[in-house]
Length: 170
Image (cartoon, rainbow, N blue to C red; front, side, top):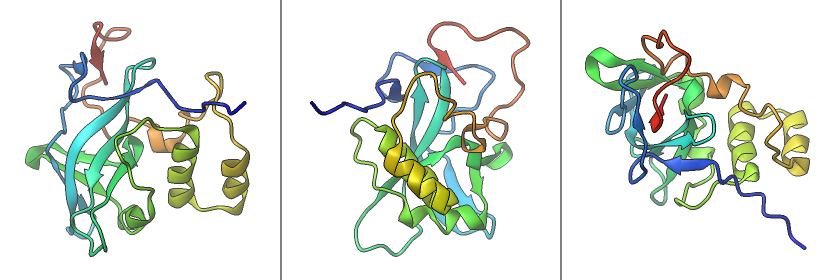
């Protein structure tokens, strides 16, 4: 019997019953640039974790690259810095150069293997390749306790209370 390793805890913000918390920026439709000022694409939507109520990925079509066909990718939220005065999302050159190698996001459910492929492209160690081949996602693991999912560059003015209202995500 095949194991369904789909991560059902993810939703796209658009069309969901959730909204960005008032103290967090809604970066949907912001432009994405690398540190050299080269245009990458726009933030099409955000993928959030319904259990943790945190944004995990940005969905973007890679428009600033010469690719054979159109490609949408998931960019881990911890890799971005926000430039709120101009509604821009910034990535380092080291990360932006790897984006064309990310797996194509087709809008379907995201599996643990999909997430590990993303991390593999962005970290690329031999040890990680073995991890990708053998990984089984569990709720108890600490996959999201990684710099790729740190919201320090995304958050602004963290709330002074323990959490947000129901339906709000960070």
